[in-house]
Image (cartoon, rainbow, N blue to C red; front, side, top):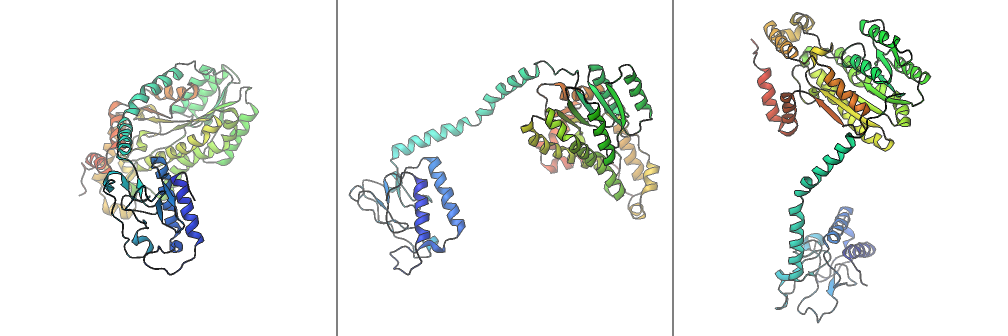
Amino acid sequence: MKASGSFHRVILLIGDCRARPKTEQSTQVVASPVQYSGTVTSLMLLVALFLRQARIPLGTMQLASDWGTVLPQSKQEFPGWGIIRPPAVSCGRAPRQLAPPSPGLPRAGGWRGGACGSRGGVAGAVYRPPARRARTARRRAGMWAAVPLLPLLLLPLLLLARRRRREAAALEPAGRAVLITGCDSGFGHLLALRLHRLGFTVFAGCLCPGGEGARRLQREAAADAGRMRVLRLDVTRGRDVLAAKELVLRHLPDTGFWGLVNNAGISTFGETGWLSMEKYEKFADVNLLGSIRTTLAFLPLLRKYKGRIVFMSSIIAYFTLGNGIYSMTKAAIEKFCDALRLEMKKFGVQVCIIQPGNYARSTKIQPPVSAEQIWSELSEEEKAVYNKEYVQERADFFNNILSKGSTNGNEVVDAMVDALMSPAPKARYMVAKLKEKALVFVCALFPTVVMDSVLSYALSKVKLA
């Protein structure tokens, strides 16, 4: 029986070997491969696929009735070659004996082993003319040489296509509804005011509806009744989230629900052992589970209207400088966003991440820390390890970082607006200073030991007594 390609030949070999019972034969006859495991069979299939991709011709070979025996179609065509059997290590028999090649056909020039390589294999010997092998080698060398050039050729085209998409007309905001969490202050408050002035229908979720920030939003809403609604929204409470969804459904404009901005978040300072388990649970509930809870509630509306989901993260997701609990939650929410972004593409829903740098002075998320308060909250075990001077120096170090933060929160709001209105929004918007972006670059590309050395130097200026 004949087979036209390597893949079909190996399939025939497998079928033949599984059908034959195990028998005792002489050393000149190949033992039945019933003893071979399923792993070997899988490897044979992979080898066959490789041979097919590599275009290794097996058309000049003919499968003999005995398993593993491959003969030339014409014995007179290649005189001097005997039966090629599988390797001894595979069948448990003595090493096979290969007949020497004829003088006119040196083995190194055109003969290869079977499917398993130059030492022989399951499918037997394969003859490839030297000229053809040289052409194949040159063709493959040229192909691999061109691989590094592909990104250089494709990058300008991708950038040009993206630029044209971004230069397209922005989306019309009139009649589009957006829900924002954490509008009491900071970025959420500024975004609610900006979107309302642009023409969006804004649902501003506030933790304290009677607070100063909520009252300012209500005064803004009074100028244009119906397009700005301030509601109580504690993202850690499921009933608040469901009540917000019911309110949105009752007052949903004709254009539908366009965007959800998960902005609510909290931050604090402290080394890992300084914080209680209750504080870890609180931060995870607000910064991580709160965003997930709100997203899951509004996901059906977002799928229906092919809207946008914007998450507030931070460059602190890449490293930590004394606030590991905040970094932990931001890194987790980024991975949630990555999964959600891929899963929502088929529904036309865009998921964007905002990564601000140090904007502590433009928000109230992180007030200056007090060393006395930190010391009073430490357990006796921690007080036995640390001293007040160390805590004070660490607090001063962190407060110094906060004091250098930008006061222009509108830079971050610009990115949030672009994520909601751009016809081709980015997956990530990093709004940070050049040195902050450089730190993220080092964190992403350099080995961990390099980043640990950089951060350890910054954090180890104060020594324990």
